[in-house]
Length: 343
Length: 82
Image 1 (cartoon, one colour):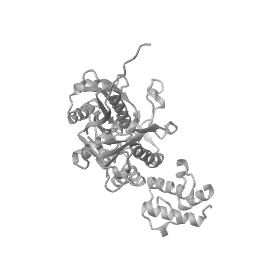
Image 2: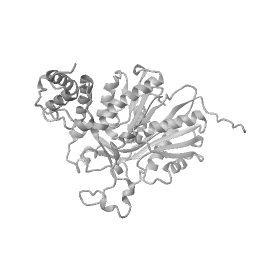
Image 3: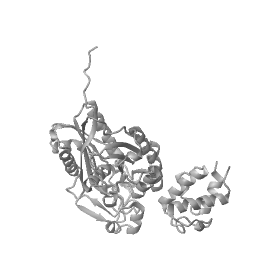
């Protein structure tokens, strides 16, 4: 039997750079209130959201990704030609073939980097980060770009008072590369497909086949409604706060640290109420900086953790070398949590 | 040992006080969580989870929406506690 030469990777991996892109249009709650019977006070008290960014026609999934990833590559101080793989997590790029990652890899100036999309909802960043760490340590890529990008405004039912205010658009990216010491802990991740109904797309794409159009939902003006993301708020809240607090704790345990060792907590920016309850349930010490980027960004699914990370570092609330717990959770249901050293 | 109705109301009052800051004496059987006690749908989930732990009872999501008043929750716990 022929002997196969093993691949050779780095001893460890770390996040070397982060970058974000927020669309230029800022949408305050007043705009959302034009189509739903609610109030600014109600939206703020239920979600913590004051405003969000909505992408314009030029701010495509690819364009936002290239902006964010370009900044992450510059922040990492490497040349794009050394990027061996580009992983894009999104649920709001509306062409399944080809993957949007290939065009992004090309526009970033990589040299034929491996490129693919993943679908892991609001846990997409953690899933991508885990893949990237594996590639760097295994040796199939020296540097990996992980991008979380969404245009959730395209998947928002503006007449649904439970979700119209919730979602935002944007892209966040990191560069993962070799390290001499552990800087990305073990990932605690998983899925709970028995709860696949509690966050979902209202109408699957194949219902748009000619012949099925009579069954499609209509808006108040009689136009066919584009699919949107819908959720069972109370069920999501219970799972996110109480089950995900356990997963977060497991990630700390797996990394061999306690919450006392933490500097920063960056949960998926789903809802301020979820974040606050998680902090309480986890009994995080006062000194831990908690990301609450959702207030002015909304819920941007896979993009929310790298966007929040980038903002905390840009404002000085967190600094390079800090120890951060990141946890993503969402439609699937899926989740991923790990402890990282900030770039 | 199973809790009595009085103990359940007392326990719920402490939970609602902790989560929503409502004075314990305001938490009475006929009070509506949302209309009288300012417990919104998300805080209600926190109340339910705290009640589950305290009274060793399971309250699934689909039953939470039927618990409009403190009396509804008390009856549910009385009936379902281990």
